[in-house]
Length: 379
Image (tube, rainbow, N blue to C red; front, side, top):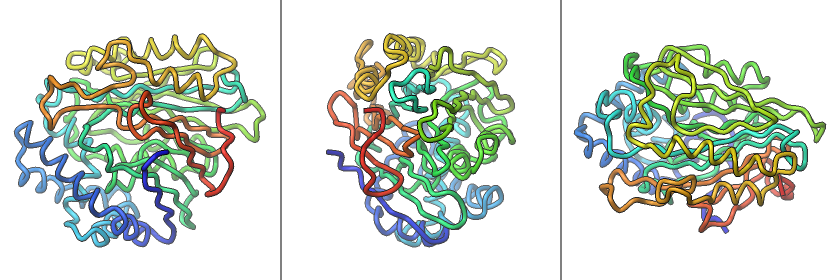
């Protein structure tokens, strides 16, 4: 059974942030230390990182005041500086964008592998999204599931790092969901302080219609690159729905669609219009992980269920840098990465199955948007 804490949040942005901060204060502090160590390992001092966090307070408030208010509540609840919370919420930009060439020549890489499956691919005719989230090993044990009920937007459930209010992978009450991957282009960092990645993730889950869910990714330029797999269920098991994969670099986007109901992605660009892709230079496993996940899932196309998906996400070809990633002892401690979580999201059921850590070693637990709902997702 998963040890992931589940926070049931309600009220306004400040109240939700306050509850988040109070409940997860030790893990928020641990994540701050993990990122400060990561930045230090790349030559960015704790003072410089915290100064960057100060800058991001105004940037975040300027793009989304409610997001900034939720951060303010979190800082108060956890008893930490707002700049540290802003640093966490902009950690993607600081890591991959603001550190310039070092981020493109690092000795470790984000290793996420994701997929989207349309009704014609799944045994229950549901839209399913999934991924392994591979990132700093120090973050494992300091994440949570947020189940949010609110009057200022759709209810949603998401997985997040403690201290990041935007969440990451999740699904909302309208059946809109997302998973994502890190990308690196040679243009990253050219736009210094744009809307941060984690805010875009939250705004996808804020959407009430599918076109509005795509807008946070497409509408404005970015600090650095990322890949978003965004889907929406079509109704109660009616065999309808959509999935679009969007590759983004600082000034460009490209859209990619499932073939025979299935699409996979890892950490390199498949569209050359983004310019030279950089992640495969530091993490060559990206070149086989997406194709391998596609092959493992596609052999059960039309009948994909939870067992098929869990087995594919637990694949170890190319270990330790496999679809299911384990920490590599050859890397320095501050830069070691692993599969921190494996997720399968049923957009029809508004629910997530999550393995807290590598799925080969950790069972998937069920997290519905509505607490107490029976497990019906992709079984």
